[in-house]
Image (tube, rainbow, N blue to C red; front, side, top):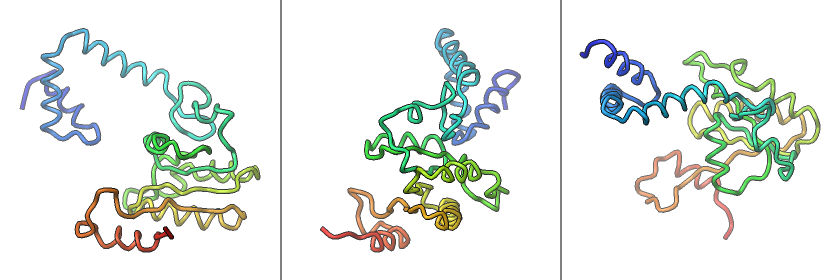
Length: 197
């Protein structure tokens, strides 16, 4: 559609997850009209993240040193590990302020259609961590979709023989939602996970 550098930028932006062709074009033209200092800050931030950010050697969350801030925190318990798919899931759980244990980031979920099996995830590393004997509970906080459920089921089968309690995050109706708009699976899980009041 466009020539040279602007089309190259649109193409590169379009390769980002969640950015479609129209969004890529809008961002590219914003970059074109933006102040050069703003663009230099953006370019610097992109370079800096590639140079400084790595994965924590313990839990595989993002970190700027050997271990992430959560793994370095002595106030957290080693007896509970929460398994998540991606680092962004750690942030979501941390925002609740409810969890005081450790994390393990798998780096995705089992998805045979995309060629992602257990060997493509950090399951081996998780099993090594669990072999230390300090963990009493493993919380499976994978996404409530087909891939997340398959991953949770696989992990539960692997871990149960070790004598570690395996739990799954509850799922059900969102606060402020209407029953009539809930899908059958969500409503079914809400019934399964009901509790006394």
